[in-house]
Image 1 (cartoon, helix red, strand yellow):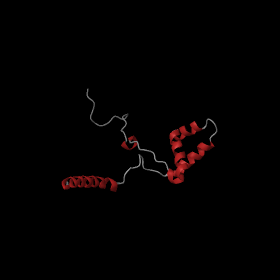
Image 2: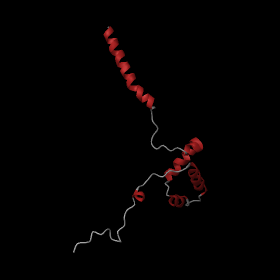
Image 3: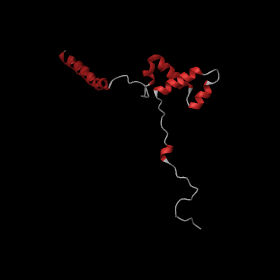
Image 4: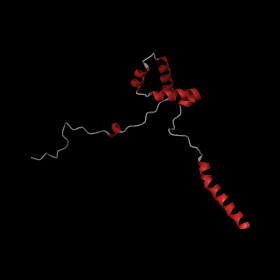
Length: 113
């Protein structure tokens, strides 16, 4: 006998899309400073437990310490992931024009001979 098309059975769970989407965590400079201070206050063997409790990795803590040492609190507020751009948008826009200018100068110099 076929099942009725009345709807979902009571035991079926409907997924909630908002709960399924994973997002990158963002840490405030205050949180980073607090974690650095707590890590510095840890006794031998307590650091791992603190990192597990906060769901952090040791390399995150190392990076935060390095950023704090290099640029103080400003280093901790860095929010843009990825490497820094080697050229500005203006430099990228002018590069093809410079190349064309050099090519035209070479062709003009060849015409003069």
